Length: 547
Ligand SMILES: Cc1cc2nc3c(=O)[nH]c(=O)nc-3n(C[C@H](O)[C@H](O)[C@H](O)COP(=O)(O)OP(=O)(O)OC[C@H]3O[C@@H](n4cnc5c(N)ncnc54)[C@H](O)[C@@H]3O)c2cc1C
Image (cartoon, rainbow, N blue to C red; front, side):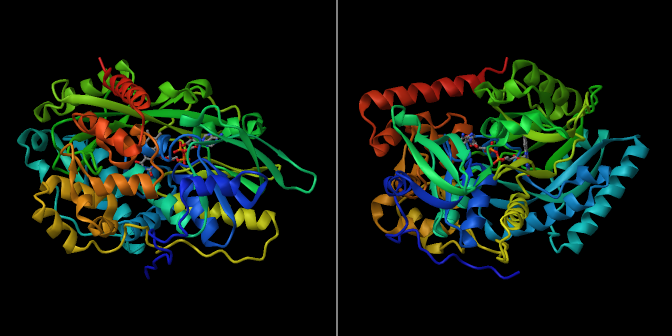
């Protein structure tokens, strides 16, 4: 595969600032495509649309990736499980996309070994899974996405070895939030105007087929006026809120929207082994996995589980991202029962987060096992609004390409779509050795250097511009990271920085030690800084309330 670089440089003066973007999209501005939602699906669609020459605007009502796209299980995969449903198309699509992500964002997506733990004596299950893994590896080879990885080392644990047959395979792990941020940068490099803290409040279709869209700034600017934007088409990538943007979705005759929620627990113990996948013997047979938390700053262990159905009302509430005590208890019990020697228990459990996804079921289908429901996406067009339902993080590129193809068909455009395949993301290039050398000369700790490289990839070169950028803030991040996040990534609040730019939310101290300095860098007055620090601490407390 040939890798290509976007032409525009981030330090290019034409890379618009936040206020320039606002100016350019208020007061009757016009665009070809308005994308609603700045999760991975919206960000990827905006990148693709702008790359194909469309005047593109993306509006996100909160921060980029603040929805499910920062609360996924962080696995980039073809989906071994989908083979059980004979969903080969979905698996092949996932494998192609996995390979592409490994190439274009090597700092944020890494190959990793996985291992299924099957009870000794469960011969039929073992045989089925071995067959599945053989097929999965064959498909990986056919799609040229098979990586040779060292055999899983954890499995030296004598108790694990005596209880389970281990079936190894390979997939990849990602930093989901930062991958969205880099997609947004890529979209902007192609000319898309992307804005966070900008909510679409209403839209209607004019007689000429174009859309009038009312939007306004949110967050710090709660008293901001509403503006009108003119859009040729609207692409609704609002995730679990898609039916709020386009209410017609919940009244469809053919399908029903299903919402499901999956919980994740974080333990402070590091996890050095493969991603361990286990089917819980809890009567429901839910799959759960134990893995390293692959995120710039965290060295802990992440335990996640497949999801459970929740109502539309629950899905759209802010509390949907909080793990309930009962869910945490269930997972802890499964860990104690299945892997007592790993000692993943309350003593090292320090945080939890949950994510919600939307799936599509046939109308009238009830008592659904959400784990078995297809992860395939569905684009639905109604009145010039193209809405995305379902889909996986991994396959966002092919989902966007499918969506744009549909748009071209609907608008009877003759344009031939150019794929984003092989298009490097901003930090996806080669990381300069010079950066680590300069950091070491400044006595920057190795953990800070490595976390920074993992977050920013080849963009670390921009931190060599002046020595002050290599200063460490509160022992956790470089001054250069803060400046890049504020200047080029539209970080506006303390939570944006700690949660989705640096991932410090998911570390033991949650980055609170750096809070005041980050507020200073954001230019917040003392009252506003105090409010944001208070809000952040309250959010952390909700994530800690696992008992
Ligand atoms: C528990 C769980 C684990 C998962 N794990 C994996 C995994 O390991 N690998 C994988 O490939 N996939 C995984 N997935 C699936 C994947 O995470 C999701 O499919 C993906 O993140 C959804 O992205 P999105 O952009 O559609 O939605 P979101 O990330 O939720 O983005 C939607 C955005 O729309 C914004 N929005 C809503 N209304 C408006 C409005 N009116 N105006 C402006 N903006 C608006 C929201 O603020 C939000 O940011 C998982 C899903 C779940 C639930």
